[in-house]
Image (cartoon, rainbow, N blue to C red; front, side, top):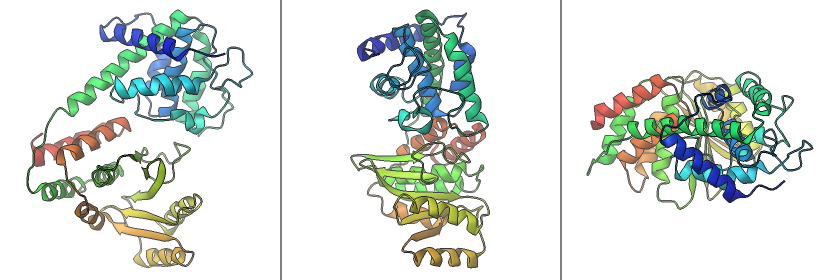
Length: 361
């Protein structure tokens, strides 16, 4: 079955317009499903849900459980084409990445099945619960009207997320001369607290964004802290891409670690064919120096560079080779990442307080 992309786009915009005017269905039958999926952090399932609702609202004959046209279920269609051609672009151009800002969500493991099924390979715990909820509730969305109501409610929630994002980043930082020194001072304060590794992640991601800002095509891919393997393409805690090609892997540790942690990180990168990586240690992290030296030398003998570097050495080094330092960009970027990646509210509040202290935002 082939859905017309333009027709789905029209459906999405109609739902968006209704939600924009506060015309949200009070008796939406799939409200619980929308709340459960969108209030969680699993990006791929968010895109799957919105794509299914938009498609079903456009053509009642499609099966919202289907992901690929080769599914043997009746009503199979190419959900990836709809997602990439409509939902991804709408999220980028209209919603300011409120849905998640993913370029190709259907390339991730949860979407690489013919259809949604509780037997699909997925991590246990919350991810399995979201999949179970989708499998049990999507079949109940059996009319175009129910699907459109669900889509409208989803748009309403995404508009609230968009507004909150824009509210948080409504400031301008004009540092003029001495921007690098001011940013370094701000980062030094940020790193005083670790917030379970989230602050270190934001700082390193923000610095790479500064370093690569003048590149035509780059991506700093931040993965949720303590959720390793959430994406099929995840290589390290922080993956950097240039022109669609993996550029550098960064493992981030802001707590005590062992040689096992280093080995696991290095082996995962080696499996991709890369022969170097950064292992960045936060102020609250560390290990026996002898163990670090032994591990580094062991990989060096195999032709692999395991660059274990303290964050207080990494930050000024990378900052020092940035062609331009933009404190306003850094502040807005790390706040946007924190919200997109669903970092804890206490982390976001801490970051905001430090930014206010240094830049009066």
